Image (cartoon, rainbow, N blue to C red; front, side, top):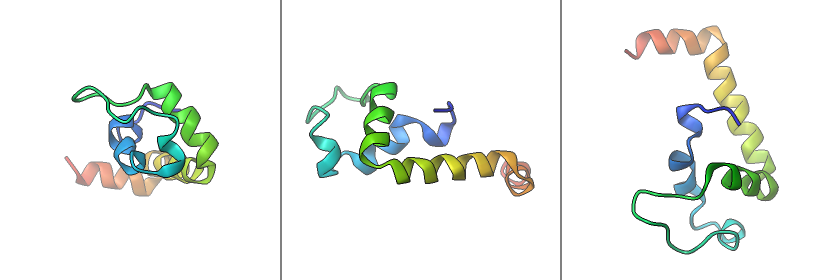
Length: 77
């Protein structure tokens, strides 16, 4: 999993914190400002929701590796 800001666990975890399939692999509460460990989170996410992870990676790579993504980066200073 690339280390892109948009793929950070702190950005993705809130979407899945209440997902019934994901909840059984994680504790109910984490310390303030903490989430699950990155590698473990993405291993579980890839197992439980592989299509979501593929779509997310494709979108992130497209944004970073296309002319559209480069133009967006130049416009968003």
